[in-house]
Length: 291
Image 1: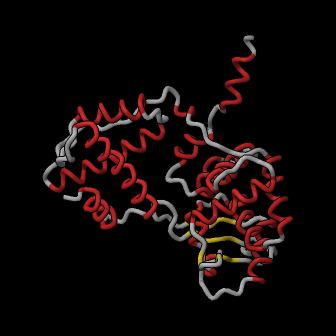
Image 2: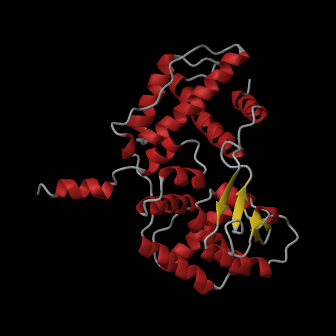
Image 3: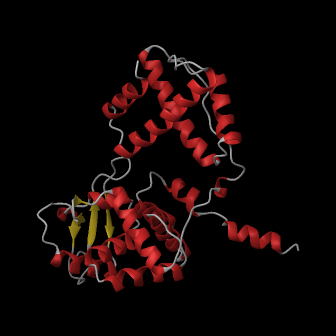
């Protein structure tokens, strides 16, 4: 039996997002390879607790993965095992990840205000209205890259600022967990979008278009990396700009419930786990005081 193919079909039928399906299937493909390499046989449809312990040990001590990566793979394995149980071959097994001493030790990558300014200057210097609007949206709204490339003309609402009810915003119709949310636009993002939409002549409903049609996630990261090189800063991804957006709001003392709503997090706890933390720089500075 092609376990991976059947598992992918099950994920699609249960309504998992495309990103989740890709992530889970990639992780399970790696597990199946480890299983065949370790036991010198094809996977038999059963995950034993011994398998879990050995695989987790392999990921930690041989592959040298971080706890966050191991825990993600264990989550995929847990879902895979539930699928196996439903098919009649699997058995209950205790599948858990790696405990971290402090959940706030999970480092997130952001860029400094100086790096952000250098990136924006490189984009504006290019004169490319599409790229300016794209970068401003990522910086000013913190949208996920999958949400960005899914935006259509119907999701953009630009109005004059002349009252409480008249404000510009974008609509995220299918955020993570299929959640709907509206994100207000500041003046810079609004201006960038207005100037781009005037020049945009493509008939596609998607907002961001490339030479071969609507931009894909990979294309957005390539665009960002190009401007990083032009700006002379370390290459980053769109997700780093999302983390930077949330971190900047935290530094401005924006209430956590508001940040959570803007970011489209499943709960306030998720926001706190990521952004109410002690940075690596803070910890380094602390121990340096002892020298």
